[in-house]
Image: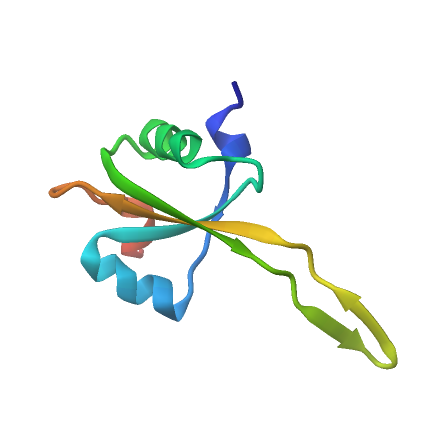
Length: 95
């Protein structure tokens, strides 16, 4: 079994993710091989909260250009985690 830090890579702070915070949902970039059960266990272990639901989305990498050279950013997986009522992650609450 993998460590929680290997499953949860980083939080994704975007405009849409900030709007989801009002519904008690938080977005993370996770390992592409991780499933919903592993993501749930990792979030509960790292942040000491109770998770109600996990939704995962496989994100395609984008084509980026630098002058005449084109390349791709890597594919990645996003997890939208819904917490149970009364729980929140202080990391996202700001300074």
